[in-house]
Image 1 (tube, one colour):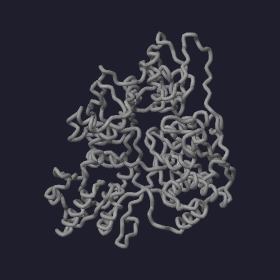
Image 2 (cartoon, one colour; image 1 turned 90 degrees about the vertical axis):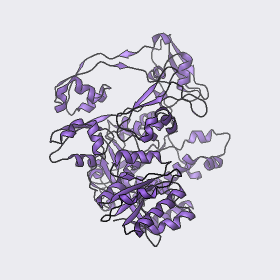
Image 3 (cartoon, helix red, strand yellow; image 1 turned 90 degrees about the horizontal axis):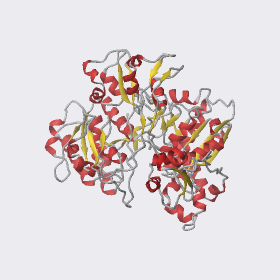
Image 4 (cartoon, one colour; image 1 turned 60 degrees about the vertical axis):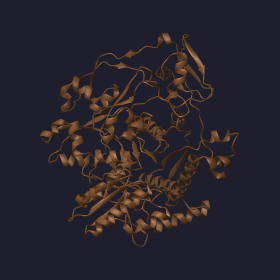
Length: 630
């Protein structure tokens, strides 16, 4: 462990250069525990006014930091001037809209001809718009609304606004029967939202962006829904003209964050057999060690902190696996300069901006990290002009950049892969969902409307008579179980056994193998069911995984956990992709790889960037081993 802290890291603090400070600006020294909202209220300005003069404050503020505060007399809304934009080579409507902080829809309303595409030299009329300060808090007179977008659930909306599902259900009784696209939800009835500690909450609405897609020859509504992983009803709500049919050249609107599901998987290759060692490459790892915080901790020793700090332990585990990957690449004779830099990130702050500036990361061949999605996005944005690939190692990101590669499949993609597998088998789907899994129920209701959701009785178990009429004799009936309740699991097993006794072909699918399934009480009963489940890891032992575990234990005196294995797989995959004759992005487009446990098979997002769809469909066999489902 001591070796980790003996490594020399590069620590440079971000410096704000403040020029020509007028006398009607004030300086504020941040006190312990203060937030931007509290400071804004103190000076009767908005958080936006503070961020405008102190851009680095958006990454978080530290005690004793100096902030420039404008006089309240100078705080006014700014208005952009109406003007035109001349289209330049390679520009798109989406890019122009983003440049002027507008939506594609606004540009299309002002310029109907752009629906057919933009041309070099074309003048685009821009809409004048007011630049409003972001809402700092909900005051006593405000009512906040949210328009439900495609694929949103009550849980995701509650999380977005720092509230709870229960509060949303109280304010919107109709949602108990489900959500519909375009539905207006009351988020707050005028009361100030507060956290558990009594501090006021800043609601942060997340704007949903849309992109346009031009329908290709022979594409159908069914094919489009499969490609965008949306239901046909969702597509029609966004594009009412689809009710009249799909035709070549039609331009439709889809959420910007969707990925293009081609329905095909790239061929899995061993990239160690096609290495091109032409020049030395530079790889940068941005990992959140937060060494300065550890060294300044006067309450806990390093050993005590390691016992308490799960995030630090995860970082060190990932790092230990990454070191083994770097060593493996060296043994292959590949030429790499590897920089390991402390990203100094917490949930509320990071030093990414200053790190990128002071370390010339625009010259790197690839960057892995940081860990928190918002800082991965910031890194990708700052390095986008240099086209440096930025790999998000652990978390799903919400924003898209052409140089951003999401290596961890999203939870929705994992579930969608399971549903795609069942549909490929032409299966009949019946969902058994715990009453506490409201978000899962809403997700299936919206995204997979061909799935029958069995109703529950007052005790929360399945109403038996509701399932029998839904069983099909000439198909495999897939019982899709989503629960963390022992009672619900036993109820589902009873339904499966009853259906089999009546002569039906039944398979049990579990979308999330949680700790309840692994308990002694449950495991022995479900393992004989040959349950099928989606997984990010391949449970089977291979010569490579056995060798890795053995080497890891020799070095670290413990067996590797999932974060150590992921650290190895992500770093090793990145370094091998950088060592091919093709560019990094070209290997992403046409090659899938497998590591010790993780698969990397990327697909392109419609907006930009790539996301990993490397998901396994596994099942428990009678001999208690886990195998890949065919």
